[in-house]
Every structure is written in structure tokens, then in C-alpha cells.
Picture 1 (cartoon, rainbow, N blue to C red):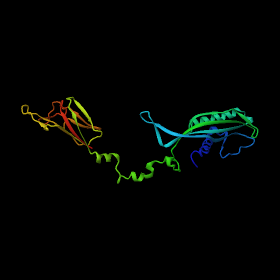
Picture 2 (picture 1 turned 60 degrees about the vertical axis):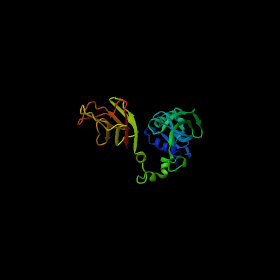
Picture 3 (picture 1 turned 60 degrees about the horizontal axis):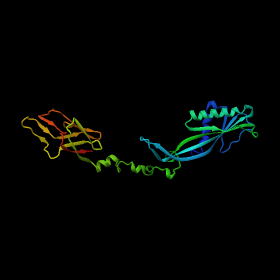
Length: 280
């Protein structure tokens, strides 16, 4: 039995358990269950009036509606046929309707979009006042996930070959594929003489090498005795001065006049072209 066709029976079973609704006798309308004649208690038959299935959409972070490929939205209009004995008066129909809708709206897991009722009539066959009411329920259908019936249009492609796709011994994930096809990123940047400069390579490198284009790696100044290094190397385990690894590339940081073993690093000289190699 599908989730939709079993919905009235499930609702009836749930309503029967509500202590505040013990004065009402619940039954399903399809298949029809005979009512006692004449009625002694308020009786409510639950059935499905209309059913409308439409495409389902989910809003992404940018506010754009994206169609759910494997799910549909269903709008179900439940019919509540409420019968109250003549002795209870017509207000008993409205009382039952109000109590039922309150329970379904505030206590059940159903998403009740709207509800309403028609005019009260009398039924001489059961000596009862009759009120036909309704409630619209919005639900999601994802047969590929929740149903025992596998509809082709709802099937996830991954369901058809999931064990094969997820086999890590024969398939690589996207990160591993990038590592093999694009193991390094090469590029260049201009020095601006600023305190710092960030360069993006599109991934977090394991190692970065930076050097000047067309210049030696060391610029020696014999008059001052201080050498200027135009080479920088950064790894996960340690770096030379003036360079740091970031989440999407690396950052050049000025070391000022700081010297290490009579050498200082300059990786952002004004107008100088630097070349970098970033390894995944």
C-alpha cells in the first residue's frame, strides 16, 4: 500500500490516540465503513477529496529556485465527513471540526496549508447533522528514497551503480583527480613594495616556491655585508622568511630590515616580476 492511499487510515489511527478526541468515533471513508443507525456519538469519516502532484523546488543560498530532480510536491485535500446525533445539536459538528483541525495543525507532523467547512445539513437516514469539512496537506514525495516502488523518473543515478562509484580502490574522488591531472600551478605576480600581498591559486598548496624572473636568487651587497634573498619557499612543515601558505594560495609578507645570517628576504620589490610554483 502506497503512502498516499494509506494516508486516511494513518490519520484515523493517529486521531484515535488523542485523548481530547475520545468523544469522536473515527473511520475511513474509502473503503466505506458503515455508521451506526441511529448515531449515538459524533462520527467522522476521513477520506481523500483531491490530489495534485507538482514539481518540487528548493531555494539555494543565492535565492534561486532549483528543481528537485528526484522529488515531487503533492497537495492533498482531505475530506472530513462529520456526523453528529440530532440530540447533540449542529454545534457538535463545528466542535468536532475545530478540535480535529487543531490536533492536525499543531500536534501532528502534517503540514496543513488551509482548512474549511461547508454548511451543516441533516441526514434522516442516520438521524444526524452532517458537516463536510476539508484540510489541505502539503507533502514531499521522494519515491527513490522512501517508497518500495522504484519509479524510473525518480531513480537516483547513483542508486544504479553506487557500489561501483564509491569503490575507492578503482575510482578517485575529485580532489584526487585534480592532484593527478593538475599537480602544480605556475604563474607570476608583480611586486608593489607593500607590507603584504596575497596570491590565489585556487587551492591550498602543500608547497610553494617563489623567485624573481631574470635575476639571481641572491643579491649580494659587499658594502653593507647584507645579502638580499629573492627566493622564498613555503611548506606545511616550515617556510623561509616572508612567505606563508593560505587556504587558496600563498601570502607575501614584508620582513622589513630583519636579517637572518646576514641576509634579508625581499619578495615584493616594487616593479619586480616574481614567478611562483604551487604544488597540490
